Length: 287
Ligand code: AMP
Ligand code: FE
Ligand code: FE
Ligand code: ZN
Image (cartoon, rainbow, N blue to C red; front, side):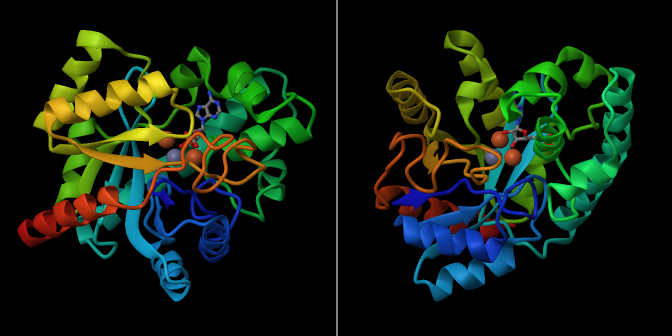
């Protein structure tokens, strides 16, 4: 099995890079990529463990860019030592830290009694993302589930207006991946909630900025969505990738490494990594 979309404790995943790669191997994953949000800090540890366990490993990152909804770009084969990429990650980390205090204020204005310590306690002392806040909101009894915490607080129009961090433009996000020798891929296209000409217009725009692939196979895609994204990949000459978006059971309880939601993924490890590796080699030669 192949799984090219995996999070660790370096962003909002539950397990360390080493633990995550061990779990992936146990689940039957043979080709893996770690794609933490806006950071490359887990790559070398994950690579080492993955290779010790005999897996093929791709370096990765998932970058959230400006858009009316969540628009995430995956970058594969990036050089984790690229100065441009490291500076980009540092700026995003700073924006995340600044968002943390705005999120606390946002929640306090809504009568939620929560402190930074509450958020850190449920995450081994670290804070980086909304899922950590979501977990704290569940523990403190303000939400029934992670999903409920997002619906009530963390993915509301008010949240985006009052607390969200500045995000890089799609142009910047794709450019920094390409500069680091990587291949840029549109993550979980179903989250865009677009179809037909609107979806194609966005795809065309992203392709003009350097996008080279689409995550057609994704845990939460229906068979019909997967077919649509495979057709679009064919039409626009895009690479196809496959990823679970595993974060660990305490963050996304239904998503399993390699196989997705109740076996929704289970893509064989043949053509996809071969084509991806070719594209990375071509980009690295140019970067
Ligand atoms: P952040 O990068 O800190 O803004 O958080 C992004 C993370 O929150 C990603 O892992 C998403 O899967 C998760 N997320 C975003 N929106 C939702 C939602 N509506 N329900 C559940 N998880 C979400
Ligand atoms: Fe995440
Ligand atoms: Fe994402
Ligand atoms: Zn993700």
